[in-house]
Amino acid sequence: MTTLSVPSKAPSRWVNFWNSRPVVKLRRNKLAVVGLVMTLLFMLVAVFAPLIASPTPEGGRNCMRDLGITQTRQIYNPAGSAFWKALVAAPPSCYQTERQSFSPVPTPPNPDAYFGTSQGYDIFYGLVWGTRVMMKLGLVIVAITLLVGIVVGAISGYYGGWLDNLIQRFIDVVLALPSLVLTIVLLTVLGPSISSIILAFCLTGWTQYAAIVRGDILRTRNLEFVDAARSLGARDGRLIFQHVLPNSLASVLTVAILDLGTIPLSIAALSFLGIGLPVGYTDWGQFMSFARQWMDNQYWYVTALPAAFIVLFSLGWNLFGDAVRDAFDPRTR
Image 1 (cartoon, helix red, strand yellow):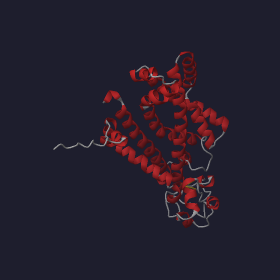
Image 2: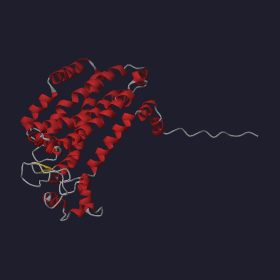
Image 3: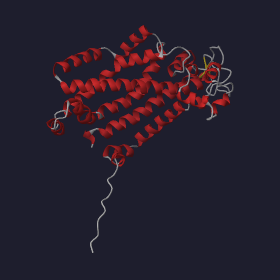
Image 4: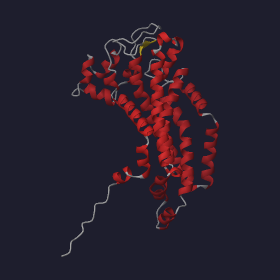
């Protein structure tokens, strides 16, 4: 009597990815896990900022009006439109830091302002909603610059010749200028606003991604599997986006993860200098600027709390980004 063997089901792509060597190495890195947990906590704060620091009738009347509510507790009702509007598309008035008074003297933490006030602004409200602002700006800027850098770097590295020389000379000119100085000049000309910050960082940030992608594609385009696809009649578009580019993104993606932590830090630095977001906007750097006149043990909260948010946010992304870079680096396998 013969028995038929049932072929085993092939593991899914997710299982193969989860058990791959870089991911296993990443999971075993305790600092990577700590960094990932920290970034996830900040993401949760950013998503649920309207529920953590909800607008009040005393300082957030404009936000409540635009949400269509009259009482703070209405924002916690999932059946109401204000709940989903605040979570998904909060009106611009909600990003204005609630102001308890116009006194420049800080007030200590109290039931009305959990972290106290600085220049009359509620520190707790500004830091929680500022987390959403920083997360949103970091993701938007990195997404745009990464997309532009990948496209430009892929075209430059794959085709080479005069087109590659033209693109690389332009990138050299941009990289020759200090990015922070160029960003400051652009913001001075454009004025402080969300759109100006996004435009300024995108104009100066795509070049590093393009240079990294170009270098990886120069190494990938002449490999045997690319030559095999070319001999089978694959067109340039298919060769670039299906064969060459997917095998050239590991380095640039790790840099993008690190930039998710450094770009918000740069935005906070610009606001500290007074050329970032408008005064009163929920921004970590502004609270550090407000605290310059009150760096005293008596007013520790005006400096320590905003600094803690900035340091922990950047630390989380850097711990996770460094671990990803080490895990996917072929020299460490």
